[in-house]
Length: 150
Image (cartoon, rainbow, N blue to C red; front, side, top):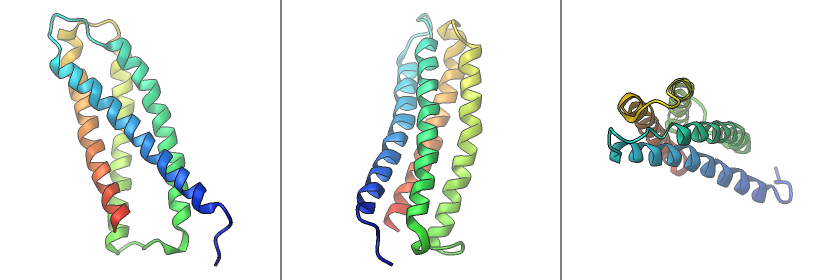
């Protein structure tokens, strides 16, 4: 079957947008987490920054879901199915993504609840929320790298 003219360009744009979405989601969480790790307890907690980051993060999640489905559709009949190493890794990635979504919802609810709280109050909880996001996002990123090279 012959590809439609320009479909390679569309596939490249979809993949690039997917990578950009992950960079925003993971990079934003990592930057705020490092800021929280380096801040003192007597400083104000960066809940205003966290609130803005939550909006950006949910936008990135939407981009990731749409482009992830686009990437999967672009694989078409050439994708390896369940039981293959690629298929098992893909299923693992989907399970990890499914675990990330409730974590992101919990994180958003925590950020809203802690608005205006001190660093001593909000800091430990926000460190855990953003640190866990970075850890799980890094594992998902590792699975994505494996999938792209398998």
